[in-house]
View (tube, rainbow, N blue to C red):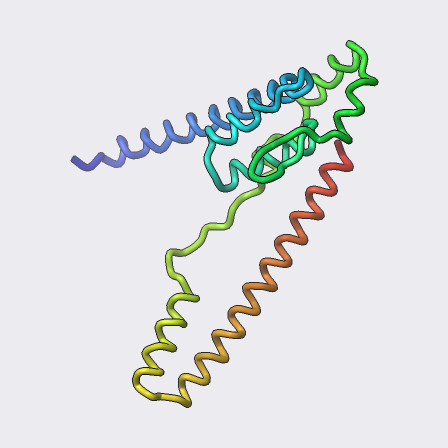
Length: 180
């Protein structure tokens, strides 16, 4: 049966609490992945990536690991970053204690990931393509030409938006790398 408003509110409240716990658990796991990474084992990072799936979670974990760990993301895996690992040889025991404190105080993985924009199920690209096919079948060439022009403008705008987003992400990663 459907839930009452009170029952539904309780379910949502429960999800919110579990979501926060999961975020914190992932942060704890990441900090400990850095320690295992220092010991030479990057497998835990990849196990964590497999556990969280795709999307913003994975993006945030990769960005955090590359910023605070000694790894880089290559071919869908986090692997040793030899340049960053060279610094480990110079670290003393007190440096490791400082590193742990720094990691606890670091930007959280979910803050690095940012928020993914919510997308509508309406697919403009597919819709415009279907309209073009229909107009072509009906031999409405004048309207078809206008729709094709609109479609091209839409594609260009999508490409521009993607480039802007990529550029913003690169700048954000650069800022985080400098801060680390």
